[in-house]
Length: 183
Image: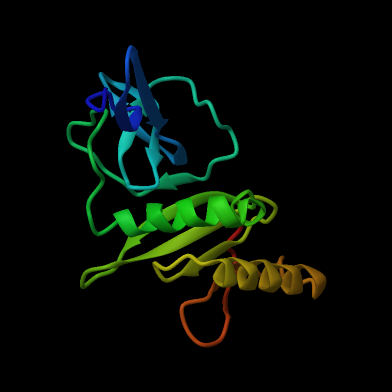
């Protein structure tokens, strides 16, 4: 049973005299990504361990964040994302279990490689046109801080003058719109 990509674990228990109990735990998606299969772009669902378990099927859960910046040479069900990125999916799993309202505020998470290794995240909130750059650690505190900063930017009417916010340092820094740049 565990050879099927959609099954996380299975246990078999024999109850004497004549019963066999099978307990199956299905994989649950924490994010959706897109990949190309036979010239078509198709969705793939990724669980909290970074396992791609469904490719090309209709997405069952619609409020999942989209993860971009992943590349796969030969995508197949059951494969594991790069171990350097698996922590992101573990964090998304924890956040979805404990703080689903915060995760529902995220439309897209873009993995942005750093020049000398590692990566940052560019988060596109659902209700804002601004992007938010963070380090690779997603926590409920960082998402709450992001939402607070976005509310302040909106309330102070700065949204038209900036294109994004950088939360990687000790202070939030806004990225100003260049003259002549229109979105």
